[in-house]
Amino acid sequence: MTNLSGKTLFITGASRGIGKAIGERAARDGANIVLFAKTTEPHPKLPGTLYSAAEDIEKAGGKALVCVGDVREESQVAAAVESAVATFGGIDILINNASAISLTGTESTDMKKYDLMHQINTRGTFMTSRLCLPHLKKAANPHVLNLAPPLNMSPMWFGRHVAYTMAKYGMSLCVLGMAEEFKGKVAFNALWPKTVINTAAVKNQLGGIAEVTHARQPTIMADAAHAILCRDARSCSGNFFIDEDLLRSEGVTDFRAYQVDSSLREDQLMPDFFL
Image 1 (cartoon, rainbow, N blue to C red):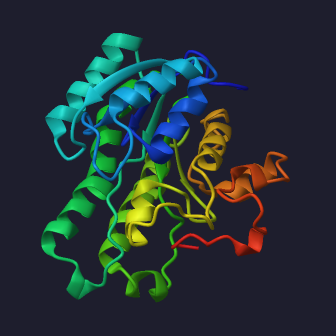
Image 2 (cartoon, rainbow, N blue to C red):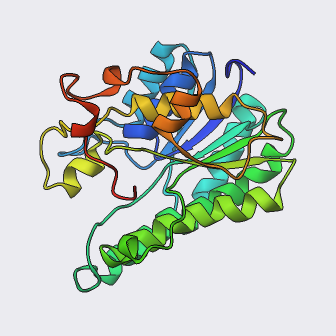
């Protein structure tokens, strides 16, 4: 498959950042994008809402459906899935992008923060996958893509921020388990960036800085996701893809266009927290 024309993508956490970028890239092919998130009003520190994202999707050439909801609430996710199917006739692709992050040690992570990360990252990914599966199994080339890191049991990744690592690895374990469970029926893959990505969530974790200059833009993740989603679901499943490595395998050699500051050398970019 060369493009995503006519495909329906259900994207969680789609109002900004990587989720929105993946939607816009698919929209350029003429895809239908179901935008599921909570953000209906502009946030004082985070730009973009579901409605501004929908406008950008349609400007890019796609059709947008706004579904307001919290990925922690089963009834709200179920209602959004039913609305997607009623509007577009099915779901071809699920992007589990919604995520909460707190790069804090054990004593600095209160239980409210812990619960938020586990409910959104691990539980939200499992639940949304479960609710979309009956529709995905009817699709011609069904893909589930989790924005999750490759599994690595090195204590280093746990010692720094064990609560967040556990929550993100829960998303990775969904890929590992569901790829096996639905082998030959629905593809489950993970995608993770090689460098830090210039998103609002990352800026806040780095102290609320205005620009993450030693980073790449979300478009690199969007292009990598597009390459995965165009592959045959029956033969491309259970992979933990890294954006740059995947795009190099697709023939991309110059990555400067993805950089926030194109004058920097590649070795000056900030590696991702998990790599």
